[in-house]
Image 1 (cartoon, rainbow, N blue to C red):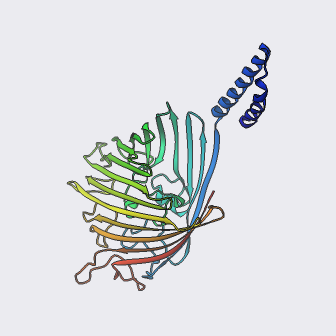
Image 2 (cartoon, rainbow, N blue to C red):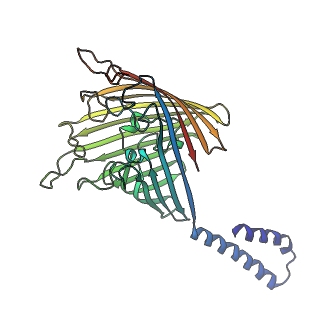
Image 3 (cartoon, rainbow, N blue to C red):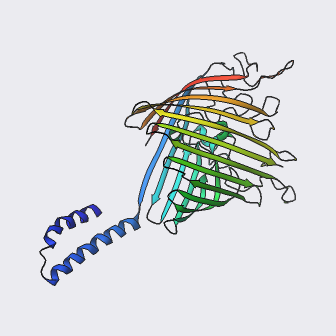
Length: 399
């Protein structure tokens, strides 16, 4: 209706110059009031938006592991875990309602990857999970608050396959938080700088495993045009309460840097670096008596060859020598990995269909010693490989 009112008013403007009576002036004011009321009414009512995607993939593993698993000894992959078969990845259905002062989002995920990305918050054993469910209220143009469950602010990559250039996810993503439940506030100093601070239950859990609360924060700034920088943090006591209901000492924290620079219209550079540390129990899985750390970095370079085809590379180094995260050897000791990923992006159907061919190499230290088992399985079921090479195709439809 706003477009209709504005059109009518624009047609009247040439004739308004000939107005001679007070009645004519009143008519002009009345038409202006109608336009203003229509605009205010539309903003107050808001609008719904429905979006989502589905993704599937085929992954070939050149080691031809007997188990057809890409996981290696432990957690070598996040989602694309199976080789030698067509696999369903994730199906998303997202509904958002937005008006001038608020926004509400319900974001549901289905399929095999739903539980992997939302463990601790699955509605059914293999089918449905709440990815996000939150609302935001804008107190002013600069200050807003968000309550509910929301995706983590940590890291360069996100859980959504269409949003990442690479299909397989990094070890930094795999070993960091996925989501949080709590309350956060954001203040925008300008369009080039903002600060977010929040309180959350814990890491990757809808319910809290203890009475302590985690603190999250993010400082965003744009030093120059086309360069975005995010300084992220989370700190939380993740130790389970003991049998007497007391809170043991424990601490988990991550410092994270995420930055991207659009060098040209077609060429993007990105960087993610993280340092984490842990002391004490981590959600019932145990942990070091003293403080132990992990960390790594990933470098990204993406370029658009044509309007419908692009290619991108990612190099990553991840170090978990202290063994406090999930990336371990067969014997349960800490390890480290160098990974190289090369991904193509093919856009079809006006960008609704994405086809992503991808080559990935993961190389771990070769373990020496008699009878020592390596990181990956061979075609006969033996653990004889310290590296893994995969080539796959991802098929994504977004709407």
